Image 1 (cartoon, one colour):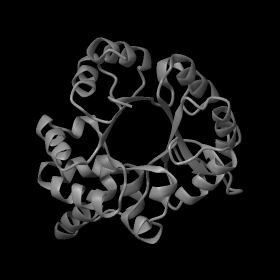
Image 2 (tube, helix red, strand yellow; image 1 turned 90 degrees about the horizontal axis):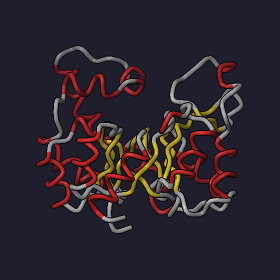
Image 3 (cartoon, one colour; image 1 turned 90 degrees about the vertical axis):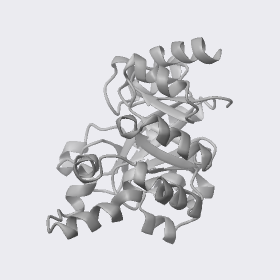
Image 4 (tube, helix red, strand yellow; image 1 turned 180 degrees about the vertical axis):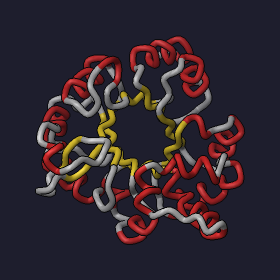
Length: 253
């Protein structure tokens, strides 16, 4: 695609988060991709959920296989599986392959740590990986909090990483080199960053280093104009209709 991809955030355009309806809405609206949050239930079945619940709380949640079955009939759209637990990539890739969803349509973001990538470099050939910035900045963060004797548990960090990161690392400007190095070393597609964390110069610096940028979750009209016109590779939004109209006006498609 010559220009930014628009990904429908789960629950986009008035639908319920992590629902079959949300996926169907993204398809109907002509999004380029849609996002789902992925976890395991007590039986190790991949299900859709952002938050961790007591195991019986997952009973009503759709299975990821239901979403992949929907995609089987819509080859025009891609899926972004935002992983909310560790060690999920190979399971998701394996399930996707059963439904004929290959690396060109399967996007992985979320909890993919640098040690996991070291152990399983093959996932970057079997899917399209945008490495979340918090996974790159994790060692920087823990170095800071150890220095201050304020280290929270890793579990707390991964439950709400940006709450902790923003307290200690207010911007990525000093870490562009590290982000670029890790993306290139691990051969991922690019980096996935919350839009509030990005200055215009960060976007330019990453572009100069050849690192494609995915931003989330952009719902404000002015911010959509900003990101759809600055050369990022993906914009994730709950406002697919608005984003498509802005892209059409700015870029003609």
